Image 1 (tube, rainbow, N blue to C red):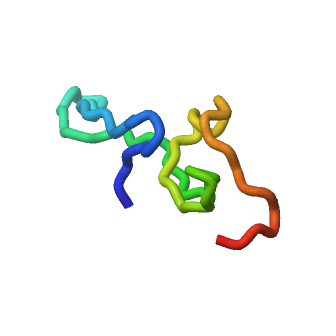
Image 2: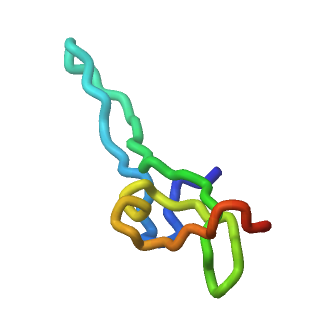
Length: 68
């Protein structure tokens, strides 16, 4: 699963992990991506969305029990 939000385009950030002895190794911070059922163009689709978009109300969830 790609770590990219389909709504805002948020993706991973890259940086360094620094140990106590100050040795550095590469690492990345992934956004919290959830695969949700969303109403998109009048249809129910599965979309990869970050939780900040869900919390901000940028998506519309389908009613409970609707097929898809």
